Length: 183
Image (cartoon, rainbow, N blue to C red):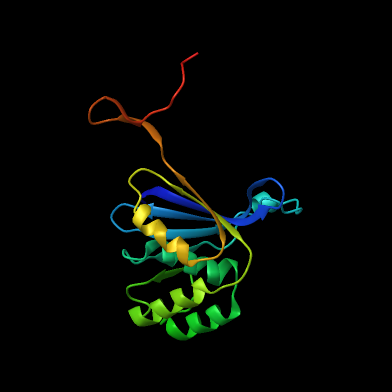
């Protein structure tokens, strides 16, 4: 499995305090082949066994050129459950959209995928996403511009500082800067 380079929290804004009340999380795994992995969080379930309940994980192998829109399409289908989007997706995809895994280059024609993106942009449901992109993620500034076509609440968190030990050099690699003094 590749390393995770992007995380999208999905939920609702708090009406008075900002932040997010998350219900789902999407992880982007990258390396040789990217994959979006969607999970329900069940953080606020009153059930005694909430931490033991495994909800179905959904995996999509996204397109390279519209990777973030692929994630937003997943949200429209599986989280927001927009009925017209689900009906169109069932019609356009060659496989069951509620199966474990879809590969967007193989399981749907490009023109139909573009139609689904357009439908997804028009969803009028109040929700919020928080996108955290790590250094080296394919979800870069160019990819993030597609968010301008959507009406959800959104917050983008980009990596400003990274310190990581390199097995190759035997030393730490530092990118960015933290302002302040050591104590």
